[in-house]
Length: 217
Ligand SMILES: *Cc1c(COP(=O)(O)O)cnc(C)c1O
Image (cartoon, rainbow, N blue to C red; front, side):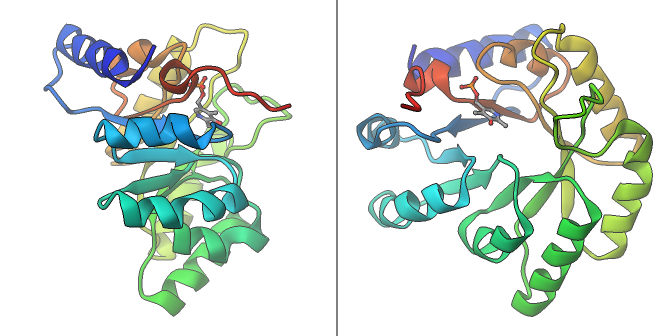
């Protein structure tokens, strides 16, 4: 599909939802993609990317940041506490704050560094046992807890259950962000980003629709 087609579809979805042009940020999810595909998108001028694995990002991004100034890379995959230190050095934002112990670790790192990436709290809107994220019933207390640690919580993130209509999950995330005074909504992937934009997404995370299918072999 490619970058420009996705940008056009985002613009159309913004207009159809009565939202301002460029109110939605496109995170190009470059995990596992061959370097030449990512470099093509960098050469087209795109500068906002998402990665799932700390070590993979560490291997790829320092050189690209030098070659293509202005890059911003967001962590969108599960974050192990023992990788948190590296993560706060590598990423401008982390979308997967999902448990108190990680919040504590990030707060300690923020104190030591005098800076923190922007943080999104991942919510397990479908209450799926195998999926990461704070349960909806626990969210308000968790937001308050993280704010009490002076962490820069800017929004919420979700990955709806694969087998369900994502729209009710996006609506639930938007409602939870609103009642907690959070502006950021990281929701929507290749298959559903237009629905997410209709529900108020501020950040969509699109991988395969830009770069092509991922090859994990
Ligand atoms: C891989 C991934 C994406 C991108 O998925 P596509 O279906 O390729 O657009 C978005 N969000 C998260 C959390 C991911 O892990």
